[in-house]
Length: 309
Length: 272
Image (cartoon, rainbow over all chains, first blue to last red):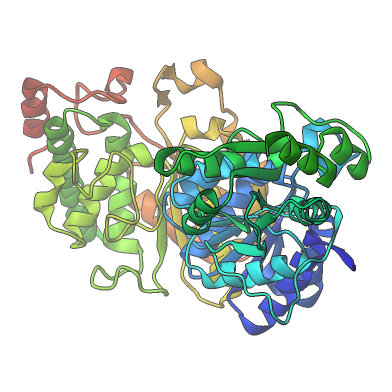
């Protein structure tokens, strides 16, 4: 299986998008090489602006450009976009419903060696709480590219959460169709459902394979859109399988697990187990070491499912 | 020009009366900082901006950002008097169901180019508008009014760097320097001086005027338009509560509505 980081796919998608749409403007805050917006900058220097190490200003500038008809992609690390830029995103971008795509990279603990200060495990919670914000979280490079194109077509604020780590490619570029608000059922099954997002989707597929061999039928849903949540697909899974396990490289507070729980608790109370970061800050280490330490693995998913069957 | 100034003075008095009436009616709002920026706003909207109330979204229009969004009553009155919406709506300020929110909402009010209110965010947005103009080869200009207390927000200085770095000479900012903020005098709460030197050091073309002198406002706007490389900031010395004797330079009127008696006295002072 080929591997590519979602941030790399983002940079490549921007170049393609910029070629066909002259209204696309890309902003960055001194991280153009890391966020891969340098690819766009090399191709379209007149439509790329570096705001320096100033994330609040980055968000405000994006809002101003969008108010004048531009489709703006604003990038930095997730910690500094959703964290430092929260109020600017809320008041300057989302409150006036401006057409800004907040496209951070380096989300989650897989930033790795930089440690807890740089590992955003709260960004989905922050962005999800803003009225009208669309929150996307791609599982691989193919999904990233499709999301970037869909986000550009959508009129309004979108948050697209990408990572640093190379991740296995799951989807086929020729056949995969991403639609905002629509989940993808990657595997049919009737015993248990795993609802996963980001790099946990591949872990969910691996867990399902292991369990299938042991006679457990697992439904795997890739939730590319955290908000608006695909309630229909979730409700169907809740009715047709015994319980649901959510999996995300994010805090269990306020992320995908919360979104699924909030919805089902009101409409169809269902047993839900949440796999994510349990109210902890991250730490330095190799991305793979951290994923193991925080139990963000297929093995842990198998364990949770076996315990709860 | 003389005749023109007389006309602007008359409009400014009307706007000041509106502000007092609106805030009295709402029993909530910010009279002091609304009154201090009236003459600048009047000059912009009745003499300077290339705008058309019939086409509030015209992409070639000049843009305006009221970064000190709590001065919304001043902007609302200006827009109503300029023909963007019915003056009768002014008395719905801050009321449930009104388009006139406590702070400007661009989605609700025709003629408002940016939703503001949370201090420190306006200049970044104005930069974005000015950059969009440059990218699209449009010759519109972007104007913004900031408060002096607002200069305490760090984002202002991030944005100040950006404007100069990208040589946004199509951007003209005003600082409404009335030296009062909620907790008292600006220099006692958190000093911002030397404000002129700070903006010069950040690479801006800096002008200083009396923000209640129409001739000086005109002249500064003309100078700003002639600047080829730098963004211009006009540091305008103003009086908080300007035009209402008992509100002038009184901190208490930052965010306090007048009583009926105070309203009547204020209106009497502001009659033509």
